[in-house]
Amino acid sequence: MTVKSFRVVLFVWIVLLLGSSVGLAQRPRPLPLPEPQTDGGKPLMQALKERKSSRAFSGEKLSTQTLSNMLWAAFGVNRPDSGKRTAPSAVNWREIDIYVAMEEGLFLYDAEAHTLVPVVAQDLRALTGVQPFVKDAPVNLVYVGDFSKVEEVSDEDRIFFCAADAGFIGQNVYLFCASEGLATVVRAMIKKPELAKAMNLRPDQEIVLAQTVGYPRK
Image 1 (cartoon, rainbow, N blue to C red):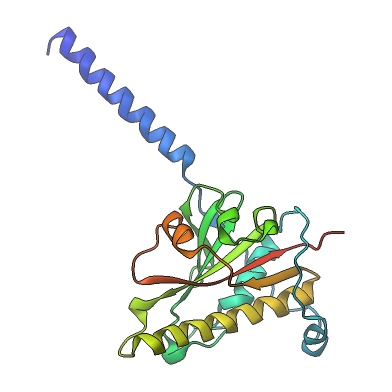
Image 2 (spheres, rainbow, N blue to C red; image 1 turned 90 degrees about the horizontal axis):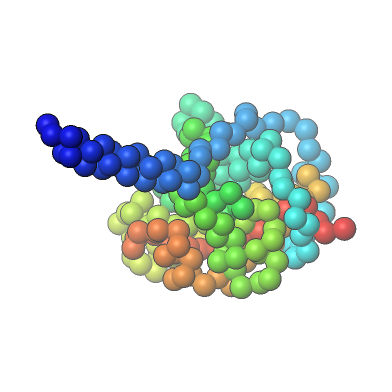
């Protein structure tokens, strides 16, 4: 190999290495979640009494433990032997995926591993709704129906089942927030095509609802 050829090869390797490093720097890292705390909290009847929608959020971030507890309450595995969840789903399809939009990026909740999987390295909170508070609240949950898991039903029934199952999950989040003194509101006013594109969703995935969570503004 000539000196000139060596320099060319070395230059290409440097470019590839720098490009790879930049890509890694921009990619959100996996967010491990601690074991959910499944004891404590307010009694169910008190949580029901205090359940409400709130649209005034502070910018204070949720702790990793609170995020862990909330996601487990939403749709976590509560029967490890069978893998079944805290919210029901038709035919046990488990067709609703929970995406978590935060300042750090967009993550997908993996209930079986109880971890957050990085999806997009951008802050997509502003795209999760048309209301002004969504861009500043610490967490916006996006409930996405995976139609590939809903088999042998009509399109009308597929939409119905996904909507119903997302509603069950949203109510779990409401009750968790009431128990923990957090503010939350479930929302349907979403620019779905724009958000779906930013989330890199497949054609057989459909955004159903979004839900904002954070500490109440004082």
